[in-house]
Image 1: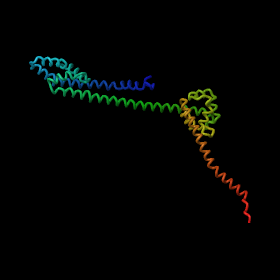
Image 2 (image 1 turned 180 degrees about the vertical axis):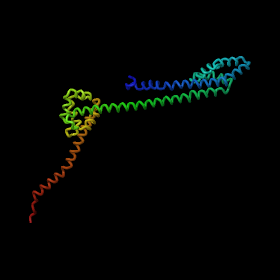
Image 3 (image 1 turned 90 degrees about the horizontal axis):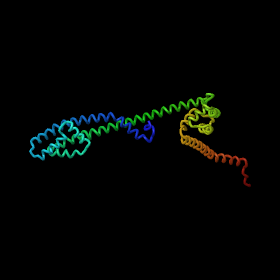
Image 4 (image 1 turned 90 degrees about the vertical axis):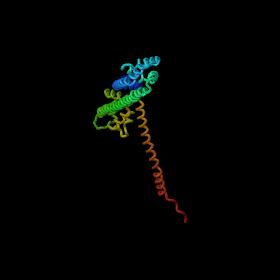
Length: 285
């Protein structure tokens, strides 16, 4: 559980879970490798061991005869040949005895490289692709599960906010006045619910001003939207407070700009009125 939930151990958890999810794939990989090795061992006995035994029976040179005997020690028998093929599969210094076999059977190298191509290159790459595919599927399932858990958490929070709003709305008007909002912080049971949302009694006035859109009452949509965005650590509340302050500043700036735009016309109208009230003197005749 610690590996799964602590972010710093996420990679370790992915490796551990990937190993567990790939256990069945690894098991069948070993079965297939064993089957392929068994089939190649039977074929190798027929096309390599038996011809070398014939060469050994007809050979008169004692040095070459001893070389064949040393080579047949690791090939003479199904279990020995399978063990030798596993050595070829993991590429454990197999060229030394392969050269000895090629010395007596020149075309035998094709047999060993065919086994490498099938068991090592094709099969291993196929297994890697299957494991990677399984890991990607598990990762997608994790994202879906996290999304579902997040949605469920949001539904629980919305339900909690809805019950909080209903408890605060004493008159059932669908809006919260300042008196209703202030009383919620004065009530002991309601204070516990506010502390659950990380708000203290001293935040009452500021919180009401943040949620209020200027008409002196908090509507349902403003209540849900504001608290949903402020719920969390202090940085989240600070960002929301800054956003509300910025919006009010922008509205104030726009209002001031409109006032200034209307001022020249009013001044001009006043000047014209003053001119009509005091007619200019007539020029002397």
